[in-house]
Each structure stands twice: as structure tokens, then as C-alpha cells.
Image 1: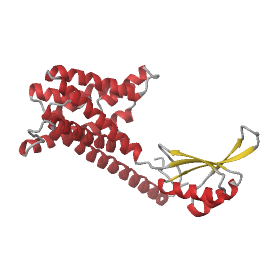
Image 2: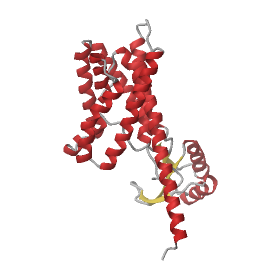
Image 3: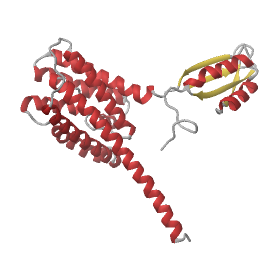
Image 4: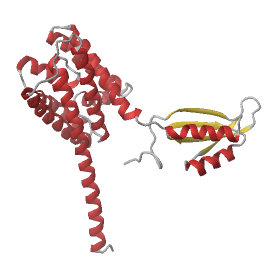
Length: 305
């Protein structure tokens, strides 16, 4: 039987880890919410740009009736959260609820600060373009930070998750794009100006690009396939000099049908040239294929939580 002392230590360790996870979740969400809030309140909303999703609908409601953008974002998310609770999962819903609340709170707080100071307004004809670009970039950063906490700010993310249940063959990104497109089209009629729809589209594109760059672009790992008659020597150099693991795949030459060893390894961007130099130094006739590795999980790289 486990002694009380051992049980107490185990409970303390578990509680400490759980507390760390909760604090990390809140920190990422708070930072992401602030970034997105500044993007909306300081750049897009003053120029009548509805940046897609529920935030875009809330921006239009603010324009029409003067309602707080943050509060309306939360209110509009409530029915979506109820549907997510029933049809997606409770964990997804609870995480999204917290993220949505923080985003809504930060948006109204930033809105009050902007009113007390000033937002991005300029007489330059390029002002709406700059607002769309920088507002979209900030929202992309905010969405990426929230994504790192394994959550979303609701809105079209919930709609996409719900629709994917009905349409499993359609990609999630296409469903999100479709939901955002409907908001952009609606904004053209609300503001009665097609330019606002074009700037909103540009803002969404910028947000998506920024988020993808932060989520996937920071992963600068390289995937390598090396075919050589001296594969064992190359393998030893990689293991010893770079402390990187390799996997030996068995291959067959298509011309002579001779057996070939194929070295498969993933290295950091900085080590890529070193592996190439090692391979060529050992075997000048080595055949090397290198490409970007989008996401790498495991020992020596990012860990699975």
C-alpha cells in the first residue's frame, strides 16, 4: 500500500504541474487577447473594417448601434459555445469559453483606452490599407498565441468545428474561409462600401499568414534523405558530431536493383549545412534530398504535452 507521505508528494507534484499548465494557458491567452484587441480597436474598427468572424460581426454592431465590441463578441459566442458543448467536446468548449471571455474583456478595456487617447487615424489615402495590414498582423499574432495554449477565441473556429462534424470531407481551413467570407460580404452591405470588404479580406489574409508563420514558420527543422554506399560512416559522423539520431531505411536502386541504405534524419536549420558537408566529405557521390519539416514532435525536438 502507498504510504501517506508518498501519496502526499505525488499529489503535490500533480497539483504543481496542473497549476503551471493553468498559468501558462492564462498567460498565452491574455497576451494573445491583448494583441488581437489592439488590432481590432486601434486599427480595423476605426476604419470600418470587419475582420471576419464574430469579431467582425461585433464590429458591425458597434458601428450600427454603438454596442461595445468586446461585450458583443462574447454575447454572439454564447449560442456557438452551447452548440460546441453538445456537439464537439466539453474540453474544447471550456477552453474556448475562457479564451473568448479574456478576448472580450481585453477588447473592451483596450476600447476604453483608445477612446481616452486616440486610435490610428490619418489623412493619408493609405491609412485604411495600413490599418488592414497592421490590424490583421496583430490579430494573427493574437490567434497564434491562443493557439499555442491549445484553444481558440471562438467564433468561426467553433462554426468550422461544428460544420466539420457534418462535412468531414471538407478541410477545416476551407470551412473557416467560407464563414469569414460571409461576414465580409455582410460588411459590404452594412458599411455600404465595397472598399471596406476588400480591406477586410486583406486583413483576414494578413492575419492568416501571420498566424501560419508563427505556428509553423518558426519551426525551422530540415528533413534529410541521404543515399550513399558509405551510409554507415555518414551515420556515425552525424551521431558523434551533431548528436542527432538517424533512421536507416532499406531501399533498392531502380536501375540495377541493388540494395541501398537510406539515411533518414531531421536536424535544425543550423545543422543542415553541417550534415550536407559531412555527407559530401565522406562520400562525394552521396545523393542528398533536403526539405522543410513542417512540425516535428519527439526527443530532441518539441515534446508532446
